Image 1: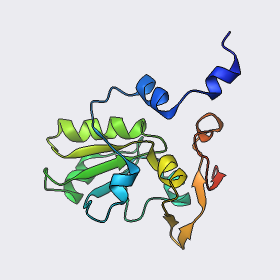
Image 2 (image 1 turned 120 degrees about the vertical axis):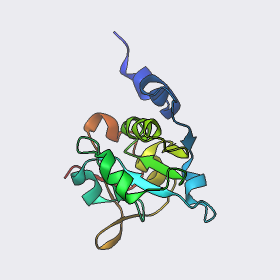
Image 3 (image 1 turned 60 degrees about the vertical axis):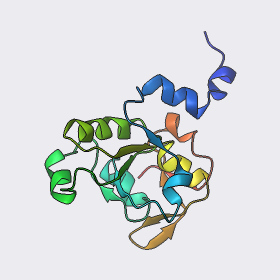
Image 4 (image 1 turned 90 degrees about the horizontal axis):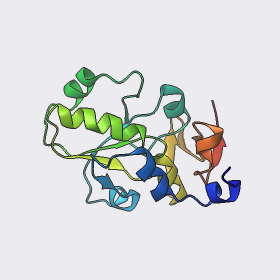
Length: 153
């Protein structure tokens, strides 16, 4: 049995290496936050997560409800810079891979997702404006969120 201490010491990098193939290049939250970065931002979380908060100007595309046809209608230019995010960057890699398979050439996975965005003190929003609330996805995954108010609905 692995002691819980070693599990707690797992880094974000270790977690992403375990779950991702790196088939999609990462973009850091710092790079995405730069004014010079002009990317279409896609949120690959479920609607209930997006409703709690999102990165400004992000377009909700979902994960279980993801439709490539919707993205093709929204982003007809296959060379447009696209950054896909989820809670930590695992589901977003799956969605970004689908975009690559359809011929999108400038697709990135946001390293650490919206959790890393919030942990780096960048603002998140909901329909009312700025918020401090963020959907924790699950008790297991929410440990990676160190800032903001974690909620589940």
